[in-house]
Image 1 (tube, rainbow, N blue to C red):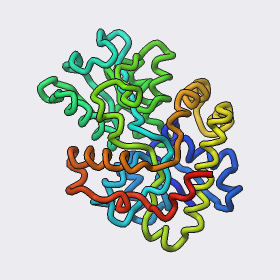
Image 2 (image 1 turned 180 degrees about the horizontal axis):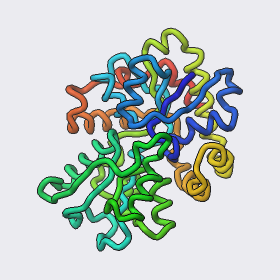
Image 3 (image 1 turned 60 degrees about the vertical axis):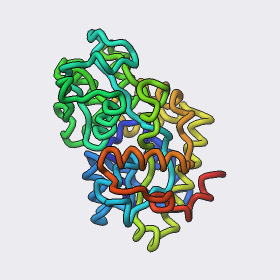
Length: 307
C-alpha cells in the first residue's frame, strides 16, 4: 500500500509514519510505505489518479481532488483538530492570540493549510487585503524531500518571512532556536473558537480501493489505531521513528512535541468534527452544499477505531 503525505516531518500525520517504522503495518499483514508528495492538492490528485492508495493529510484536503467528497472516504483520524499553529518572528511585537496587530506581514503557508489560515482571519474579522497581509509559499519548501515546517523555521530565521502557519514540529523548532513565537494555537484555545475544528488529520482512500481491497485498508486502520495507543503509553517511541526518517533538527524535539500532542491522537472520526469541517469547507468555497457524515467517512470501518 502506497500512502502519500504532503508533509513527512510532522506531528500531525505522525501516526501513519510511525505505523510503518515501528512495524505495525507489517504486524497487521499489510506492506505499507509512507512517502512525501507535496503539496496537499498534488497528493490528493495522485490518490484520485490511482498513483497512490491512500493519503495522510488534513481531511478537507480531499476536496481538492474529490468534489463534494465523491469517490473518496476518510477511514481513520490520525489526530484531532486543526493541526497548524501561527508563528511569528520573536522580535515582532504581537501578543499571543492577537490577530489584529499583524498588518503588512509576510506569512508562509502551504496550499491546503492556507485555506484554513484565510478562514481563521475571516472568523476574526480580518481582511488580509486591507491588512496588507501577504500569504503564500516560502523559499525552498518545494525542494525535493523538503518539509514545509522545517523550511518555514529556516526561512523565519533568515527573515525571509515574518511568520508561518505550520505544524507544531516546525513551530517548536522555531521557538527553540529563539527566532519564533507561537501567536495562535487554535487547538489550545487561541483565536476564534470555530477555528479549532476547521479540519483534522486523517487517512483518506478511494471508494474503489475500499471495494477492491478492504482487507488492506482495514489492516492499515488497525495498525494506526494500535500505534496511537503505543505512542500514548510510550512517547519515546517517537524518537525511533524520527531517527530513521527525520533530519537531526527534528529528532531533537519530536518526543516533546508528540508528548504534547498525545491528547489529540484519537482515531475516532467524530460526527460533530465532520459537521464542523463541512461548515468550514462551505465557507471557504471548497464544498458546494452540506453532505452527510457517511458521504465523508467510511462507516464500514468505524468498529476498528476501538481496541
